[in-house]
Every structure is written in structure tokens, then in C-alpha cells.
Amino acid sequence: MANQRIRIRLKAFDHKLIDASTAEIVETAKRTGAQVSGPIPLPTRKERYTVLISPHVNKDARDQYEIRTHKRLVDIIEPTDKTVDALMRLDLAAGVDVQISLG
Image 1 (cartoon, rainbow, N blue to C red):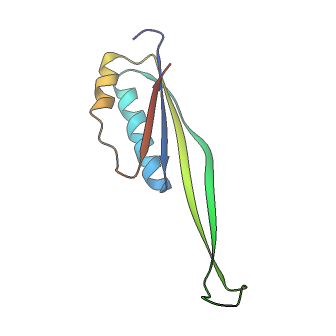
Image 2: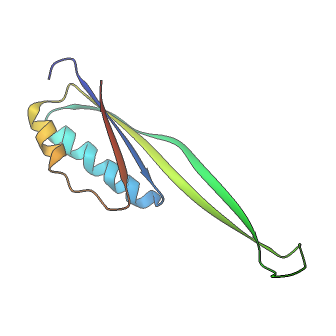
Image 3: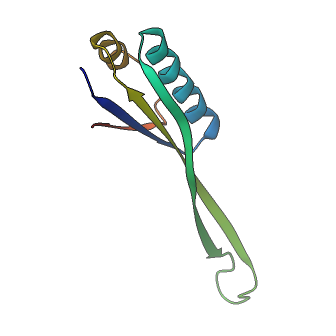
């Protein structure tokens, strides 16, 4: 796979889970002889929701909730066939969304 690059984008709500997954991907790629760039932390998306907790009046009584989506980017430069096989067999945590693109 000469002059190829694999770009892996990871998303998760739990930052510990995404850090463990990226460490596992980087370690697997380096062990099989590929060059790795990253993990690069991308901006965290914060979604905030405000809910009225009073059923009738009292608009001042509100609860606020927040969901944080953590993102990481890993580039694998010049992967070998061994690297691709190892990454295909890799078992990552259930809470991590993985997007892979070849470029």
C-alpha cells in the first residue's frame, strides 16, 4: 500500500474511553511497522440544554444539562498489509464511534 494514508476519526462522550482507544490504535500501528501521526485532539462539541423544572409557574427554576462529544484524529502514513489486518481485528470499546477514510 505505497503512498497511502489511513485517517481515523474517533468520537465518544467519555474522554477516558476515547484516549484508551486511540492509544490502542497507535500501539497496534507502530507495532506492525507503520508511521503514525497523532492522536490529534479536535475541538470538543458541547451541547447544552435548559429545562424548566417547575410544572406551572416560576420560570427562574431551571435545570441545565450538557453533553460533551470528544474527538480525536489519527493518521497512519504508509500502512503495510500487516497494519491493515491488525487494525481490522482490533476490538474497540462500544462507546467509541470510528470513521475510517483512505487517502
